[in-house]
Image (cartoon, rainbow, N blue to C red; front, top):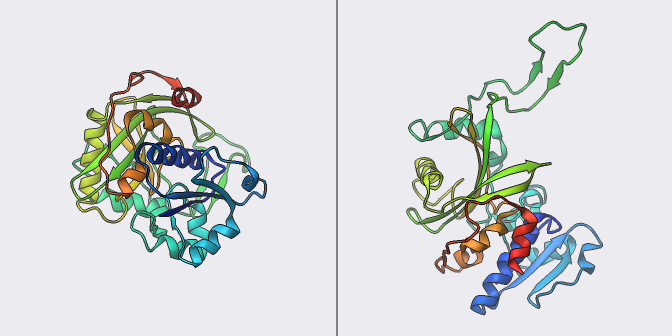
Length: 290
């Protein structure tokens, strides 16, 4: 199988490449991975693996049009905006994306119908999407007033802990959950602490996922990840999800996460990592993989 990853200059592209190398090197699988990016310079980078090829988006779209590859779910932005990529992605359940997945207000309202009894709650989501935000205090003129259109307005949570959870779902009942606590900088994992694969958070995530999608279809199916938080009173909240691997999901290689194995129907070879439960920089995980 030929797999294409879009926007591969990102951390998600790096994660996909590392997952691919780990899987192919350990199994001898005959897949090819095409890392694509819009930047003209990207295709001139030389991969260290003979089955990994760096290409420009134009070549990737042509491959999809000719039916020569499928999209590996590492970044969804190109799949949303390009009709060739969108059509190709829709042919596989693991890469198919519906516009409703990215309407945060609509998604919160959808999820809230099913998770009332779950440990993970949906933040209160307000009906308005076109809003005028004013400071609720003394102010002069129009200072600090914001007019916002097409936004999702939710309650503010006093966040104490943030989590990212990668999930590989094989069927209705069988899924592998890879949770980690994170501290973020500019939207990226800065410091990471891997959490037990069979711990309390993983159990809460399993309950949440199955409450929304009892079957392996739709939003929580195949390959996806959740962003969660815990407030100062220990209440867990859903933040958002994406139907793809998370950007820094490669840190889970040390515990056995293998999305390419999942796509081949091969079971995950889970491991107990000596770094579980310890804070590390993202870069430390890359050093440990060498």
